[in-house]
Length: 476
Image (cartoon, rainbow, N blue to C red; front, top):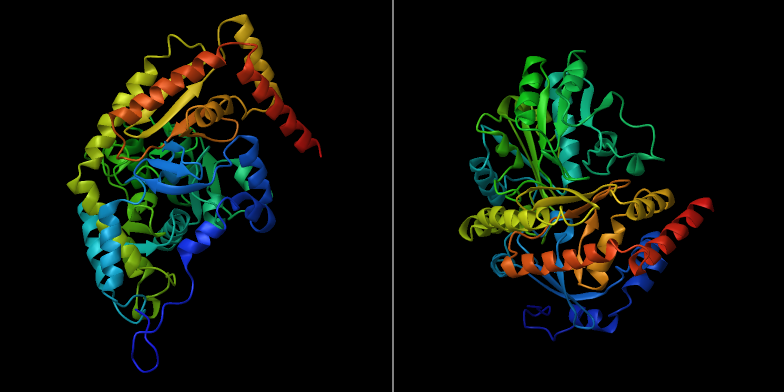
């Protein structure tokens, strides 16, 4: 309600956001080319992802022409609850209507205390203290700072192909050179090892200067899953050599794998020192992250009244984000979304795995719940092997695009290539998908595979054109 100086209701005025959206509808890519990121616009247009979406509900999006899309990417995992979940929207509307104060700063906010208490209940071990940040990358930054301060050591071990964010500290523990190139030098004493390699981990830990080992239970770039017991053994090695074990659950947490934390699949003895959560934590409505740690670590960082805000962030503990987090947890529990993620993930994964004997390009399907990677490999037959070689000769990231593009153009399904120079298509569906959505995807994927196994053919003509364009671009 708008009031005039006399306390009476003022006439409506100001920005009409709905009218603004309608006025500029369809201008997305022109505006971004002019003001935001022209290189990304070119990429999206090249692979046929230049759609303008105007409505979202659950696992679906609609574009300006009214076409419905199945979102099997969910904003890189942000929309685990689907888009515009009605129960979360209701809570946020009620909170706004309450005109409750936020970010007073010189106070201890109520909702952040309640959300911290709720998150601690869902941990596999005693993680006593919670810091709220604005993104997964910022959460990783906090975890790195905590580890260095608590141990007095400098070294941080991370894994090849790891993805922990793109801010400077997080980038320093990123295992993909395509993101790192041009931003050197990184933080000192950040050392990379192979994922799932305990011998390499112990060799680094044995040096005695390691503050922490930071690891994703399931690597987002490629959807690589460690061997059974790998994470538990890594945790024990960290204890042996006095290093902290940091569990990055930004993408895999909040129930995506059928358990609240993906690390819990390694059994009841898992005992991370620090856990980082984000993405689904606010159901996609507000940027938020949470860093949970053991009390002794917290006490080393915030060791006195003078250091009580030694790590902080202006928007940390914003009550709108805290309300969204509480609403998201309520929906996950009350609607059984972790159980649905497990059930739908198995239905989808087994359906894809059953196709492997039929399609030479399909090598492996990996999944935990609704975090899934479909990996391709070199085929047996000479004709298809030739096609594989041509494609990889043009660009090592090109082949899985041959799957992603027709899934979008012909079947209106949003997926992504799992990483640079990785022959994997990645799926991160919302936890709310149902059996009809799984059938939609499986039928579409099967049809795409049939087309990709016809060489020469239309699918290969498109990919060859894109590959040649990529080569031309790099030569400039």
